Image 1 (tube, one colour):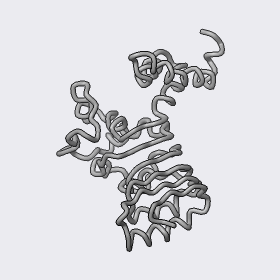
Image 2: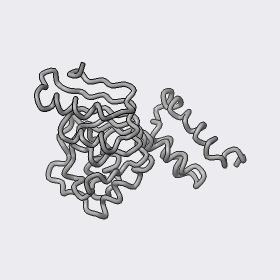
Image 3: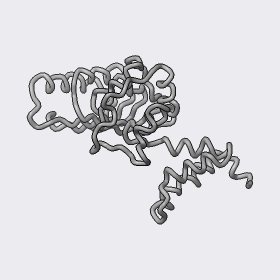
Length: 212
């Protein structure tokens, strides 16, 4: 093995080109990175870093739970938001399963959540900050107390409720904030947004339809 491949930064640059290669081949970037992670110890960490850096939905993390894996990857099929909810009747995670769920949480930098599975995560204490290195987040406020790290830079909220208070006390580094609200929202929600946002003193860009 060439000595240059022993440098993690070099491997990251090389592995980053896999997204370009996957456009011209049938194999996905995720499959290529997963194969590299299994190749040797030197390749493992750089490949896993890129494999988990951007996650869409909680299913990839929930799929690490042994009990839930066959439900999520049913017959090799990926469950998405358009399918019948696979979580119907599923028991919440146990303390041991919560550790399986959080196995790769420290690697995630970008997280987008559209599905609603809050009951599955009831074992995780509020304000646990389970994604300590998260930089970009898109979600409803259902999960705000779990998923807000102190160094979050970018956040896109799909709904608004009392959880918005979390921005004041936790997101001290927040720079970019987008809040989607229906055109007919008014009253308490409008006042709540106005009251909380002005405390986000480091915000550079703000997008919220109901605010002037």
